[in-house]
Length: 228
Image (cartoon, rainbow, N blue to C red):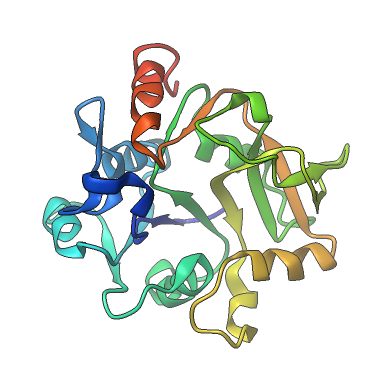
């Protein structure tokens, strides 16, 4: 089982407009608390767990907020490395073996997503296990979906379920990718070609807090069926 989690918090947050002029997107508040704190809450049932957070835009604000907490920082101030490059840079901090990764710009309802991934993880069959949602349960999301799941959970690309930004992944294949800054999509493609890319459907809802108009949707979730 993974013993570390990578929380992606280095994005520019451009869709947030003025809300991210003086702070990084993970410091935008939902329900009176920064998004990064909501993300860290999800790791509590899995502790002790190495928790790594990357930073870039207005990184000093996030650094100050997390000072004195059980969090390791992966600094991407000089260059934003995207999800794949960011995970590769953080690997010495995360340690060996599979890791959880989690986007920081989301609010969840239903079961804890990291616990759901842990229950479904089968390292004999999988190199990556992505947590997915039906489109109707992906609040604030405007796309047509990312993956089609076979009855056994094996994934192929296509309009269907929405990727939530939470997964367990074996990151070893990152070392063979030539680019410095790249998306985890490159590694997923390689894992899928080996028949090792799987998904599990989240039994709740999820709100992508990527735009200001998503904040009230996420706050309504906090008032109702938030993570159990």
